[in-house]
Image: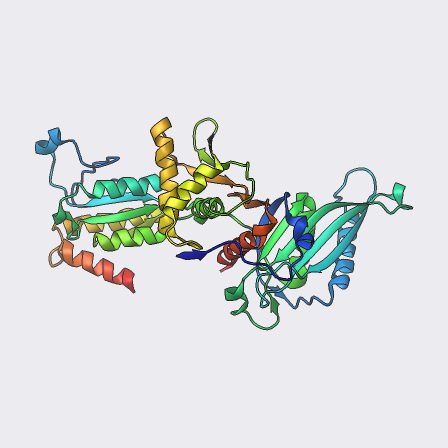
Length: 143
Length: 298
């Protein structure tokens, strides 16, 4: 995502679980988008995400959260049931994206998608709010 | 996703006829429907396959180094190996070696077995045109060289496609749960789960063995309706095992890859290998494997 050409500055904070340490709260910039990464090969990653979701303020679920499922290229490594992920997306009203990290093309496409989402969530795209975009994304997956 | 009990009452089936499947390691393949296969022509197929193997040997693709050995091919039907009457009866292919030295006694040594079967494979056979025969599950015991010979003949003759059947950790969890719940007389074999952890320089294997009675007792507290298993129940069962392990060893098994499951009923490996240990549950396990094979084809 950092490598993509863009007209704005982004900062990415990676963490293995939430909540973020309270001591640094006052130093933290505004969070525009939260991407929860679930590795389909690891049941543990799903459990971790489920536990972390509880620490996220409800306002974020108005279009500023999305789930990114990785490892989807190899079906025989699947440790997580797809239904569980769909249900998570539904329960938290957030879109579910899929990505195979090992394939460069998909990796780049996903980075571009996330950047676009980030732009919208940060309010940089006039006429589209995070909430309306989130609704759009969800309706298209329902079809 | 709901699943029903494994042990289906087998009327009119002679366990002796299917006993050849027990206690052997079988490699699993999914097979697409066979075009213009006719079970009245089995003897012809045996002849043709035999000729094919001989021809390949002539070409120098010898399967046995050293002594010229005569390979005898037998293709037979195993009518007891099916689920419902709508299933095609299983087809067994056997390769035996006849050494010239003992031609008098015609001593034959079975060296390779391949079994095509379909157990409750309705949703595949229903959707397939007339000329096709559905036998989506292929079990192999024997050398890989024979497997590729037989496989290529079937592919050429019936325009079908073989693929190694991979079993995901998700499906292995189902098997572990289902087989733990099965009633087995005098079971002394533990329920064993093997996990693979990607590590440098070699992956680490973790083996988790549970006393079968303890495992069954745990499952009995989880299962709500006898004879039915849901995805939630499988998750709860596995989570209990994982938390127990974590409490003792501080390792999250849920972050590793489940690669093998062994119980008194059967043992299965993610690379597509199975060992049937109980004739009572043979049909049940085959039904499961047929289901996996059909998913892989579609």
